[in-house]
Picture 1 (tube, helix red, strand yellow):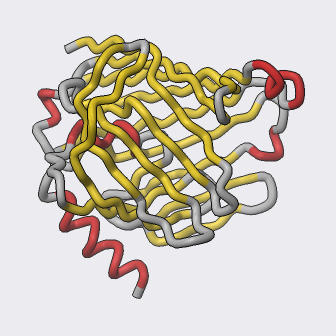
Picture 2 (cartoon, rainbow, N blue to C red):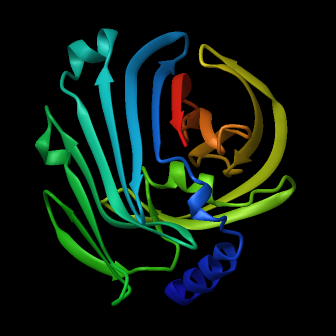
Length: 235
């Protein structure tokens, strides 16, 4: 039943995909991650496309006390196809320099509708819903969607360990000011219930709906904020 629901849900969302040929050929973005007022990590991301294929890399470098207690970078990779629905991942990897036991991997078999999830303790298969994203491609899939305020967005997403369903309410928001500039934004809110993790995303409307700020609040109220520091977009 869950698989059928996700297939129908994703098929509905795919109808709003934009023309992929208008998407930048390359995006380079740098973010800082804050816990309170303290910066704890830097994220460097690169998106590139070659015809109907894409490559995504994200390197997370710990800073300050986090670098002392949790040294080693995190390397996140996603590559796959680009079609009329946007990004269609084929392989996702989350690799830890200092803790290989936390490495994870997701392989997408779209013909067989099968998702293979692999980590240090197990390898298992799940039904692959149409429109599923990985945790990296999801942030760049927004470039391909016609997003409108006062509407909803639903999709499935994997981090290599599990597959979850995500629901966001979309609204307009006040401009976001960062060291990368001023951005008029759309605001996405996962509207989590009490005790659940909540994700809030601000998308830069004039910059292909790329994220310029993300706040994740866990069930205990602890909060991480990711803020855009620099952005380079190549048509």
